[in-house]
Image 1 (cartoon, rainbow, N blue to C red):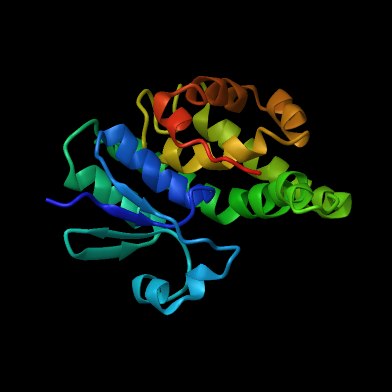
Image 2 (image 1 turned 60 degrees about the vertical axis):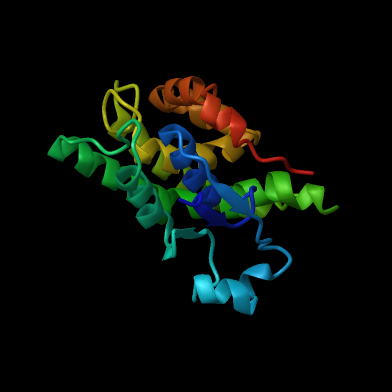
Length: 213
């Protein structure tokens, strides 16, 4: 049986989530780099895998798939290893809720605005636009406050064990934690700070850490 293939750049948060799922399941995989910034996601080859030109795309033994949540659920159910989806109905619902919050409310302000301005623009020789950052921070604060409540005193977002919700959130916070804004956000959200301090040291997180610059 051939190893699964993940198509997308290692620096992508969503590609990293797919990789984390494989890492936590103990499943070997192949990463085929498709560079978003070079326009490779709009190539005919990639559009055949993902008609919307997004990342990641996925293939396993001739089965093609896209959308990160679909990929990680498939990985959890297709392979042996630790279960990444709770069996308890309410915990599983919480997992899905957190994944939705990350997608709908956290990713855009945290990554597309703050992280891009603080980390990516300077790498490309530009200067961070503090106005864009300032405009994004209320949405960042609101999303993080919601996640703070959802995790509560639990070690992970869906309760006492690692789930797909954590793997969805880790790449976003991995980048955001490197920005100056993170210190204030974590100070205001001690549950999130505790969670990040614990998951940041996981072996899978270390192995998939993106390299910028």
